[in-house]
Length: 134
Length: 90
Image (cartoon, rainbow over all chains, first blue to last red; front, side, top):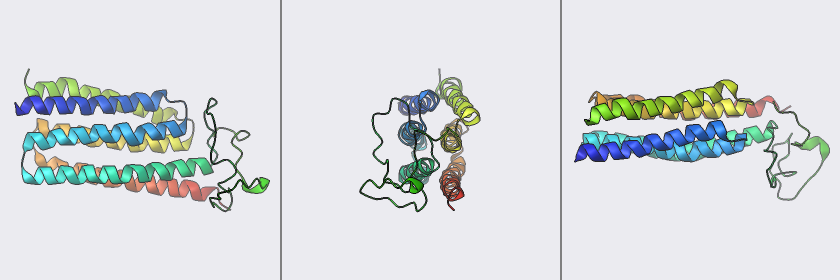
């Protein structure tokens, strides 16, 4: 019975990791790839670690697996925000079919200050439509 | 089919295929931010592979390595994005 539960949970975990891998290959944009990484892969690895917990069913492995899951759940949004912010500053282009860019004219390029009103000073701003894809 | 055969022949190949797909994005990735994201996801997949191996070989001490890998993944992503953001600032 325990083995069936372990197999089912590990299957779902591997499926979510595979979905994250397909997403990071197929998504058209850096920001969408960051979105895939921080959701699907965290859930998949968390499920695989849960299957490990069910298999060993001892206190030390359970606590260790929960520490890893808690750490992943805490750090995945932080690292996704940091890398998204850095890629916005270095001028990574949005997707062609993106509807709108909420941060246009609000993040200042040189001072790295987020303003609440649009400030289109040309030497302070990243123009994503004219920047080359690096 | 026992649990160990199932983990060996179904779960591990799925994880390896996903790791190969992420490695393709890591090599190809148009911008350097894509490469950092792919590296983070690759280490996260490695944590899953280590967890499956600890079930297969019945060694619960392999989970220590998974914890260290989670720490290193977060630290490397933070450091790389920090220096990536610092690089263009005058």
